Length: 263
Ligand code: CIR
Image 1 (cartoon, rainbow, N blue to C red):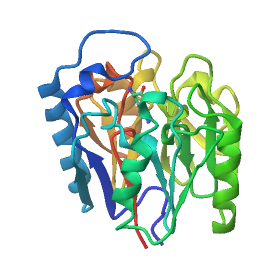
Image 2: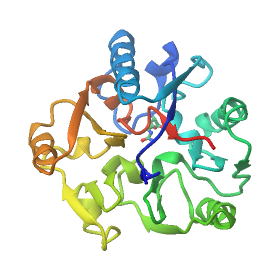
Image 3: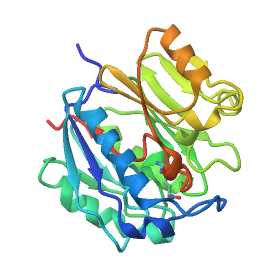
């Protein structure tokens, strides 16, 4: 049987708004180039489509500069979609926008109502559990609410720590298959992946830890040759995508899509 944590029939992406140049970032490393961002985003969509998936491309939302990072607004499980409650005030309104897009695709839609906060970038769904990292954007109350929503659907949530200074839990890790995680050493050293096989990203290549396994490919940002070679050596098929502009906004491969199989 195909594993549901990395095999998907569908993805949702959102076109980048021109306002993305005003998107959130921890450190200002320069203004993102919109045209380059759009080109990379197009390549990303093609990479998803090339695995046979249907990609739904939503309209740009100028009101929300970070809305291209569509992953943070929802968690899409096989039978239920859960609308998040982003911890960044400027992103809170993205929840209602994604809800209306998901309503034609899912029969069951649940919602985090608060008072807690939770963003999709802090959630790693594996074949056996849902790991959620506390971060600046996700708190214990948000995780607790998610846990009570998904329990009746048969999912166990495990709350873990995201090391200080890292935007999201998944900034530093990705699922590669049902037993294997790609992770930075600083995250894996917390012990949160004990019981899984862990492949460490190469020293100095921490920024490629945010990759995605999407059907037969691992889609990772370009220019991380040592980690790319290590993954090839482990038997994974790699597709690289330019990420220079999204990286200026602390974005990577997972943030740019919601990946799912509606039932
Ligand atoms: C933000 O700070 O919210 C955006 N500039 C980047 C969001 C990246 N999302 C993700 O890692 N899931």
